[in-house]
Figure 1 (cartoon, rainbow, N blue to C red):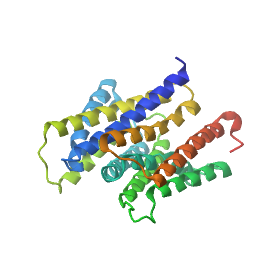
Figure 2 (cartoon, one colour):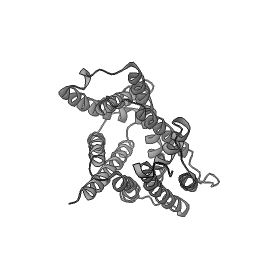
Figure 3 (cartoon, one colour):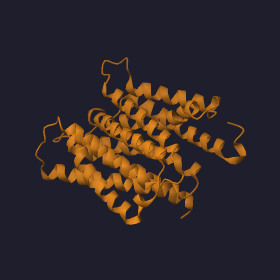
Figure 4 (cartoon, one colour):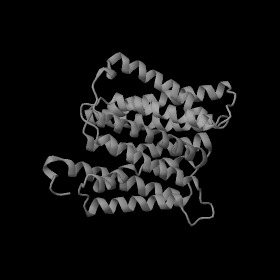
Length: 294
């Protein structure tokens, strides 16, 4: 098996794991409030990450005050993202909300032009605009069936964009596990605050298994995400992140008996196409021999 094929396989496994996490959270949401789900899942994931971090000595490393603040605000964005995105997952067609999340490479590229003064270029700007048109088709604001939870999904995208910008500003000396653990802890604290005003519901065997499955798949997703980007060429591997939409279409149909309407389906195709082309272009521009041609 070639390195590129291994990397692409790991990326698709990673995306499948994240989509399954979302699906199990939604299934648990049939009987439990979101705050309770996030809190219980957070206890499991944060405890496991803490054990691993202690084992490899992450907390013994010195981190600058500037990086500590960036990690803190990054953790806040994780809590905001978890709440708004998963609320949208519970109230929107599964594939639609997953597709909206896939405009992230576009929002990060566009934001980097303003924050880091990176040159975007006409081609990449055009692909970003086309991708946003795909989102408009999915949201379909002129329709009588407009879902206001689409706004929640867009807030989640904005929050993740800020998270990724903060991540890029972290020093190279900061180990990847530290912001990952802090993010999990941030979601746990955020959900605890939400639970203060949320009645706790009794749990049955099904909801308990759904939460365990969600915790497993989100940890497995983070692990395979790191592994995927370390195997093969980034330009070959990264476009396979859009397999998440295909998994969401399948899971939405099998688990929730959902099918996107014609507008949403067209929007999904547009987002996938423009997103993949943007990733290919980004990787081409960022290669050393093409630095001057963006």
